Length: 274
Image (cartoon, rainbow, N blue to C red; front, side, top):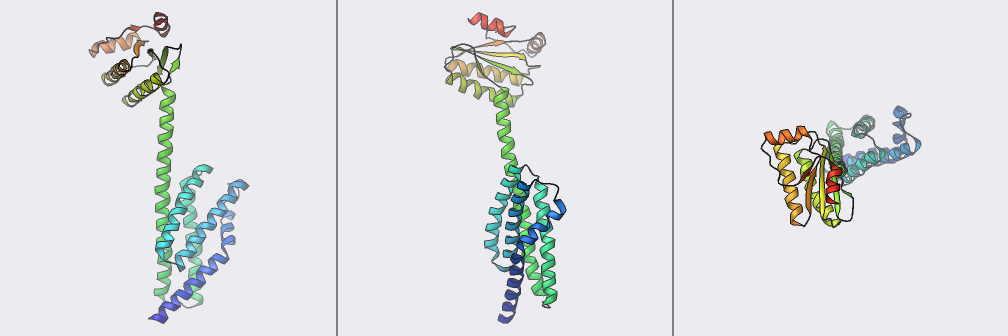
C-alpha cells in the first residue's frame, strides 16, 4: 500500500514538474488562437495571468487540495479585477480555464501511457485537476457577479445623484430641477439629497421644480410631501413650481391636496422669494 502511494506521488510530481517546466510555452500556446484580439500590453497581462493559472493546475496534481483551493480563491479575485480593469468579459476567463484543462489533461494522459499508470492513479490525478477546475469556474462566477453588482450599485447611486441636482441660486435659495419619471425609488433619493444638501448649503428656501416631470402618482406625491415636512423640520421652507395642467388634473382626481405655496413656473417661484 505504501509503495503504491509512493508511486502515485512520484508520478504526480513528475507531471507537475513537467507542467511547470513548460509553463511559459503553455501560456503562449493560447495566443495562437487569439493573437489578433489584444494589444501587446493586454497580451502581456493575460500571459502573466495564464502562467498563474498553470501554476495552480500543477499544484493541484502534487499538493494538498485545501492549500490549492486557498490560492485558487485569491487568484479568482485577482482575475475578476483584471477582467474589470481591462473591460474583458467573464466568458474569456472561463474559456481560458477550459482550454488549459484540455491541454494539461493531455499531458496527464501522455504521462499515464508512458509509465503505464494504473487506472486508479490516473483517475486520482485527473480528479484533483477537475476539482480545481470546477472551483475555479465557481469562484470566477461568484467574484465577477459581486464585482458587477457593486459597479451597478455605484453607477445607480451616481445616476441618482446626477438626476437630482441641487442648484444654489442665492445664499438662501436652492433649486431642485426634476426631469423625467419620478418613481418611488427616485423620490426616496430626493429625500436624502434635499436634506443633506439643504443642511450643507445652509439654505432657508428650497424650490422643487416639477416642470420636467411628466406624471405624478399618489405614492410619489406623498413622498414629496414627506420631503417638504422634513425640510421644514430643519428650518427650510419649500415651494413647488412647474406643476403643469395635466399634473394638476391628475392630483385633483387623486384627491392630492397641497398646503404649500406653488408657482406655475420656476422663474415665478424665484421671483416671489426674492
